[in-house]
Image (cartoon, rainbow over all chains, first blue to last red; front, side, top):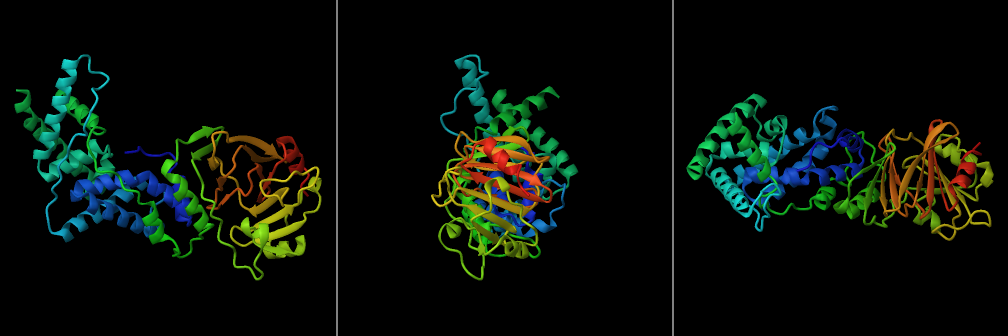
Length: 186
Length: 250
């Protein structure tokens, strides 16, 4: 997920004035972030795609209401999160999200030996397993903050909760995640 | 706590190692659902062509390269789609149509009356052979035919295009261009800020005030602020020749 682009303000301003090419740039820039955020909420790639697409269309028409100087990412993520939750509610089912490690992972460059690499790999598998055992609420806040690398403000927008709630929920969720990991380490 | 920091570090490291579903390409679908409808009060300039260009190249938009205040985004291709022809009383034809120059006028004065500003003429190039005005972007174009001191460009019937519009160059221009050889160099023309853009066979230039436009010819471009206008010369002229032409605007 890309970091905050220094060019956002200018691109958004051009898009606000009706520059379609500028908006296409924003769509390109933030599709991955929007899609993965929606995926974390819906648990379905197809629903996430629909939600992200709807969010970009709604954001386009809402651009005149975007507050200049604000964070476009956070503003967009709020729309994405709402669309994803609506879609999930409409589907009438709980998200069946299961995080998985990509196959064929190379050992991290910092792993000093094959043994250490194997240990690190095992640790990553244990971490993913623990994340999958967490409650949805815990997993979402941790995923937004760390796996999507969203800021506190962006996480709050995506999940439609106050920033203070993000911080307290994160703290508790990390504690529970540590607990879920301990049997592996023990 | 050290344990928390280690866990956070592990989670951050995990971000790039997860098996995410492939990210879909939403640009076409979003463009379809937002094009053709106009947000109230917002001008849409060269929407179709600009979007087509973005859609064609955006998948591979590379890193933005800062270059003395300018940015170049390199793309593998820009669609050859032309901007939509203006709603002119007498539709243009030939090269003027393919370059989307707008309506042809019989004289500079007539074009000036339509445009609402007086176009400048680079006297070093002489009087233009043809004059056009396009309402989208309020662009007046002076077209010069090829001649011994003005070689033909990628368009055989065109030696130079001088395009002018009431706009202002951005502090940090953004150029979307094809080809690794494109360079953008700041220059000063008649006391105004400008850029010499070379090696850009196809490119878009984005202005400060929401206006963007593509370069028409596979040549080099001199573009600069001239009072309340942005003027650009597209031609096969060298930089020094283009600068001399620019210095002669009256």
